[in-house]
Amino acid sequence: MQANHEGRASSRFINAGDTSSEATGNPDTSVRREQLEQEYERLWDEFGSSIGRLASSYESHMPAREDLLQDIRLAIWTALPRFRSQSSLRTFVFRIAHNRALTHVWRRKTAGPVAEPEDVVDSRADPEVSAIQNANRSRLVEAIRGLPIPFRQVITLALEDLPHAEIAAVLGISENNVAVRMTRARKLLEEKMGSR
Image (cartoon, rainbow, N blue to C red; front, side, top):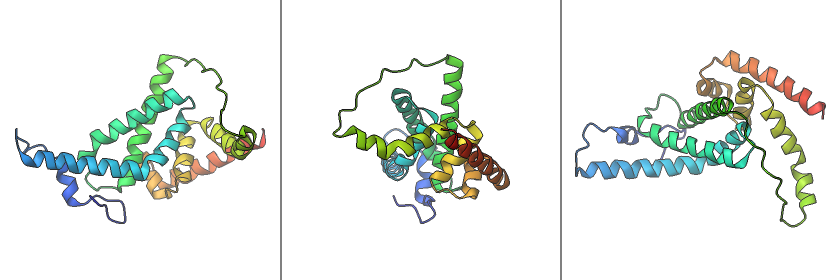
């Protein structure tokens, strides 16, 4: 199943989740499921890296990040049949991912602190060179994680090259609010990055 240039699904896919005609033994059911599976895999191929970066902005611990990614994948799979092209597919996927991430953060706060994992020695060749190459990126990721969630959301989506209009659609806020949050987030990041 191919999406058009704006990331919108075709009408053939839109009706793939319609369960009204699904009866036992209906061959259309297996065709619909196959279409959903193909679209899901295509979505994950296209947006998986971005969703991974989004998850890392909410969760620094690898096991918890993997749990969050699994929750996001399940939520996307569950919601996919209900996609109706009222937004781009990218907006649809990022909105689901952000909602899952917020739920994850809320559950983590109500459950209490997570135990810190032990440091693991990097077994790759020349870890010093790797550390130098990733130092600024790591500082930026830590600074983004330290931002309040509304600012973290807009910065994370902007780093994924979403325009203000699409960020507004993902977060359910106005474009003006996106611009205000972006300005404040940049100022906070400059302060955090300058103070290290």
